[in-house]
Length: 232
Image 1 (cartoon, rainbow, N blue to C red):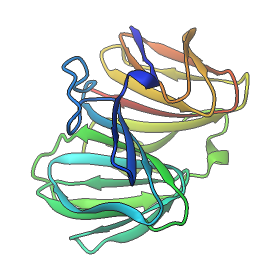
Image 2 (image 1 turned 180 degrees about the vertical axis):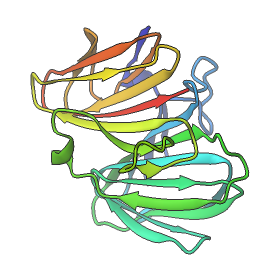
Image 3 (image 1 turned 90 degrees about the vertical axis):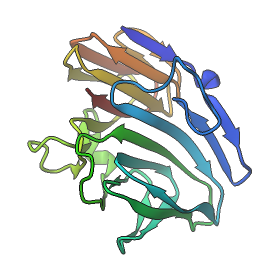
């Protein structure tokens, strides 16, 4: 099953400094048919204005992955971690027993990012934070694992969930293939250009919810960047 969820159908909240689209129910957006996808609970498409951001607030027992598309986000938390994550790179926070953090766009330009929450498999774990650079050239034409809860993915950022977050960049006409477990749940979003997912067309920033498929063939109809989550 491949379900295309048009960008225009997503939840929307514009707070001035933050213009957010919600792929799943979040905050004041509630859609019973979109409460999550497998263990994937939140996928927010955020535009954060210059010199603004999220003041300190708490989380617990959630794996939170931030994929920066443009600009940069600066993180600071109650564990003493602080770091700036730039475009194309990724940060992860395992909230565990509890952590307070702030996320600020300290840049002079708008920052755009995906914030992705995955239900943890290890409730009550020790909280942690990490970030890594993932050059887009290193994932040209094929998927690279950005964050993972599987030990075999040694080069990925670690999360406490049996899930993977992958990224790929494709030139117009290029294809990327991925083998899937039909019992699991996959969700992807393309940026920059439309893509075909097993022959189904998805426009930029549409959500594509997939289950029951043993393989994916993704063809770029223009230069495209793809972010994908595979979870239980």
